[in-house]
Length: 266
Ligand SMILES: [Zn+2]
Image: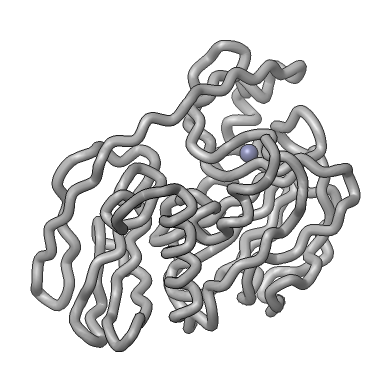
């Protein structure tokens, strides 16, 4: 656990932020001291806690869609107030040949709805002991789509980018970022072939647009193990890995957990 917090501190230093409060932005995390063995909740959802030098810390994932302002963490009947600061993300314009990936037809919409329910269930799950949150970089390559960018597909506004895109040749092996259990394997309309790995206590990683998947649901995987290969399946313009990191059901900036992302070329 300590190791991970050190990583977080390293991330803070590398972004030249001066305080942990600076990470309290949409797509960031709020790290908040709590009582020992508290089971803090945010927005009704249980939150990851870690221990650092005997101090228990809640690590609250803040959605990209969260409005800056005042929020409350509920911890053992205690209300802890904190502020979410604004953060401006740049925009990205993507042009797609497949018009259905911009404006899906009725059948597609049906499929998308079913898939997003499955995905939501996997991302909202909270259980299992977190072994270690130390993460490795799954694939090396230039960043083709940074986290958080406000996106337009064929000039139509869509949801902001919920992960980090790393470009790599099709067939490049993907290493799982941390140990855990595979909680979802699928072939989805937008995300293509995907794998979600549950690391415990609400922390997950997600791998989209894969070419080959080499793991099955419920399989236990160890950090660094190959789970499949890079591809361009689903809504994608070329071979790349879309890497997502999810905390208490929301997508947060993967570079908070994998500072190495910051040194990849863009
Ligand atoms: Zn992506």
